[in-house]
Amino acid sequence: MYQVGIDIGSSAAKTAVMNEGEVVKTILLNTGFSSRSTAETIYEMLEKEGINKENAKYVATGYGRVSVPYADSAVTEITCHGKGAHFLFQEDGTVIDIGGQDTKGISLKKGRVMKFIMNDKCSAGTGKFLEVMTNRLGLTQNELSDLARKGREITISSMCTVFAESEVISLIGNGTPREDIAFGVIESVVTKVVQLISQVPGEKYFLTGGLCEDAYILERLALALKSPVKSVPLARFAGAIGAALLAG
Image (cartoon, rainbow, N blue to C red):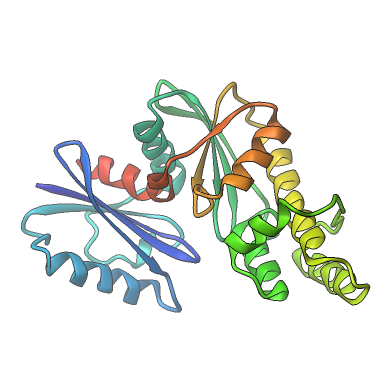
């Protein structure tokens, strides 16, 4: 039997297929307008590879977990992210998950969630904030981080994404170098994430979510937290992996 975890977030839908304790396949799609349509696309993609309701169990999680009609069960993302992170890192500590619409801090002990914190409904300090800023600057996320390495220290002080975008527009109008603005954007996210994570402090930190392969953000988080922040490419799929483990 295969175990399939489907994590439908606000921006991306992640799927992990496990067999005999190993991740054997992953799928990454944009969530798009309809979570249900995305879930159906995932099922069709898996079915073409011989994975279906006859030989697999499905657990859904994330923002759109109720939109997966073929799921055997739906589990909260906190539980799945915690389980998936412990599988990937095999250590206790604090998981930092920077998602599209929210950022989560999850404290793990012996693989169990001991405490968690989520940001409020403001999108500051999340992937959506970075999406807005990269679009405004005409950059990709990788280009933003590369530029930020070359930037001088400036501060984007607004706590609200809308006001922060207006602040960036003013900086552009004043002729501020793009690399300096990029530095300010990244630091704004890092500052807000660290403020949140301070409520679930740990001796070790693990970054999951779409920014898990961004070396610059890992460096800045580690500097601000005064502790190394570990990650691996599969950490993008932590929620889906946790769901797959629960399917088993």
